[in-house]
Structure formats: structure tokens, C-alpha cells
Image 1 (tube, rainbow, N blue to C red):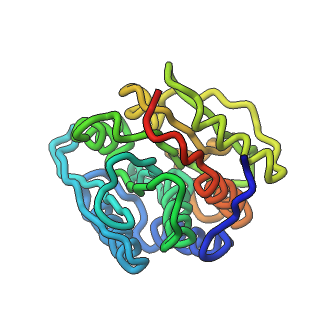
Image 2 (image 1 turned 90 degrees about the vertical axis):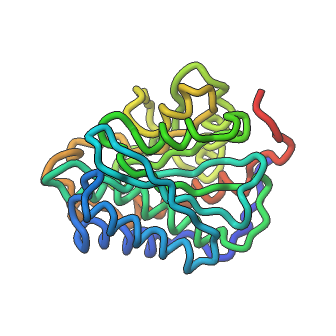
Length: 263
């Protein structure tokens, strides 16, 4: 049953916009294994720590034999079972990657800020993935190193969510769609009209779905600037970030507490 709106602060989108701008303009292109990607990782790590989260870096080798890292943050010790909320922070070459995917990281960090110190119906682990572009190396490494894949009850993915276009929330693969259905229901409860979507395994959610873990994929229908020099702050909508964040925060605080293991 929906109805909980408990958070330490409303999701306004201002912090998400600030993060998006810093990653896109303050750092710029964040190619996996590069100094710029490491600078982005340090910024994200520091942001989580400033909110009081316990953090860790998970290093791995990329397909081109460079080193990247996932940033993992949670309220305390890693829970026995949890929901992952994730977004990748790397980009392709020659693009600031504002929408793909500084916007997802912006929403990720502001969501963590809104929910800091709040007792949630399901434990949440926030993960900023490195080296998504290409074979989704960061999320694959995260899944492969889980003690058991059953510990992850579901994964919410944020990718290219910052433009003013139709809101998409969907599922992927042959997994239980409960999490996507839940998030879609929350969006509709909040008054949003969702666009038809067809997620084809092009982001980190695929690493989880391929392992049998339920996923909910948040995106926008217009991704025409992805992987181009036009993916700049000029296409980012502050209202668009706030809308995605509002749905995400409400989805998390209204998760069904009774679902303690995956079916």
C-alpha cells in the first residue's frame, strides 16, 4: 500500500543538477581507467562520506587493461539482503556525458542525501559503477563478486535521466518484474504518465538481470545526444531531474518490507 512520504528533505533536484554540472563541466569526459574517471570517483566517494554513509572502493580491471572502480555506500555494515540503486559515472571519449550519465549520478547522490538517516523498509546499497560504456565491466564485477546473488533483492538503474522527455520505467530479461511494476505504480500514484519503453540490455541493469536479479530501469525517451559532443548541460532539465528523483525516493520509502527474499 502506498502512502509513505518519509524523508529527511524533499527531492528538489538542485543537488542533482549541481553534481551533473560538476561531472560534465568540472571534470568533463570520464573514460574508463582515465585520470578523469578517477577524479569523478573521488568526488562521488567524498559526497557519500559527507552524508555519513560507510563507503568502499571496489577496484577491477577493465577490458582494455586499465583500472576502474565501483563506489559502494550504505548506512552501516553491508546488509544481509538489500536493494541496489546504481548509476554509472564514466562516459565515452569526446563528450561531457552530462545526460549519459552524470545525470544518473546526480539523482543517485541527491536520493542518498534525502534518505540519509531514514529507516527504510528494505536496506539500500548505493553503487556508482565505473566502466559501464562497452561491456558494463563495473556492474558485472559487482555481481560476480557477490557472496550470493540472492542477497540482492532487486536493482534500480539510473541512466540518461536528465532531459525533458518522456519518463521510462521498465524491466529487462526473464526476471520477476515486481520492482519495475512497483516503481511504475509509484510514478502513476504521483501523477506521472509513463512512456512505453523497450529496454534492450544497454546499461548496468543487464548485469543484474542476466544473473536473475529483478531490475527497474529509469530513463528518458530522448537519448539522441548520447555519445556525442552535444551531451552537455544545455540539454539537462532541472525539472526532469527533480521528477525522476521524486519517483525514486517515493519508490524506495514505499518498498514492500515483507519481501525479504527473491522468488
